[in-house]
Length: 285
Image (tube, rainbow, N blue to C red; front, top):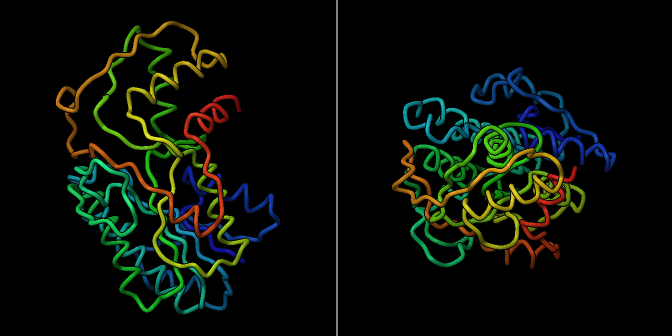
């Protein structure tokens, strides 16, 4: 049995479908088990036997977190710590999702798992502290997966927002000087399930995102191209490149957060799909 935490989120819903396809039994929870409350966590796990705990729960509102640090800390740090406690108590493997925001975004080379971290905003700091809460716990059987630019069918994300805007407006502006890799939630979910199925013991921190480097502007242009091709966008829309300074946000975004996937490819022998191909597949579906 697997405990899937945050079952209503975008990544968890994709993960649940792939678990079901692989005939892997799981128990999904959301707000009915408050992971920030250790007593609720203890009560829930009492008498249960989970082989894996998959934590897809997170506070991900990057700008809102700047004014809501307490809630972000509760979910991203204390929630992670409580799940590490649960995994230790049950002798389970914890699979925890983290983010490229743990880096400062000032690098100009692909980021490896051992590279120096330095988050600049509340969201990134709480996600990093969440990683630390797992690493410093008594648990030694865990996978921390850092991902980036996540999109998918279930929930608000850049791709779906762009589709809506491109259908509503004559032109839009998109930042062209922030670099990284888009990640289809389905691709990440398949990797999560691979960890479970393989019963891997190659624990630690991993980077997983779509293969290839791009910026938000080029990403938007591909969304428009594939969206028009698949009938998801019904009108012309001009896409204009902006600088970060022209599109200010409350929380600072990483200018460069291209994640190296060498470790995950070497340890799991997988081939990661090009981000363009995954986007094409997503929009075709």
